[in-house]
Length: 113
Length: 108
Image (cartoon, rainbow over the protein chains, first blue to last red):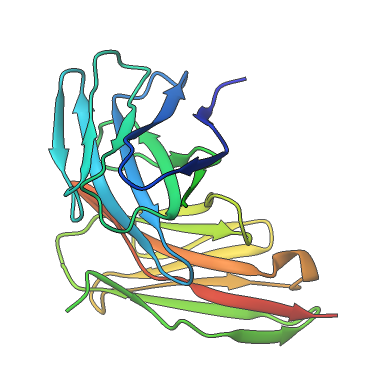
């Protein structure tokens, strides 16, 4: 089945630690995205990538880093510089064309202890 | 001004009624519009996309787009308790822009 996978589903981190969230897709989509969702709030864009080896900052990139070495993979690192990282993290992908739909993975819930 | 605005609700309708969800967007050059459903604790699920003025129907769902008024809506006919969720409106203009969502409760 084609789709987007994220791991882990739940992640607990101590303050001061970096953690990496995995996102893999087998939809052959060019574009991939990372969003953060806080309780009762909308989606905020962290980073996105339209092609391999290229990515752009979204609205809230500070304290996060990404890489796009393969078309299928777009991991997100939450660094210790991110002041309030507890949130629901969503990875998504789409074809790079103008009207193409975006699909989401199941999400990773990160809690900082 | 936010790119995409939705009434946060909550919106409550009785089972079998029509639920009407509304969304406005700020940039006239936006061309692609989407509705997502998000159950509590889950990720958003795409339910409708619309690109042209007018109505687009898919089962019990109808999306309506009015580019002149910069307005897109979602109608859910014969609402069911399983439709209870948060509905997110999204607009694509390069990247995707999301509203904060409208919470819908369908009362049995």
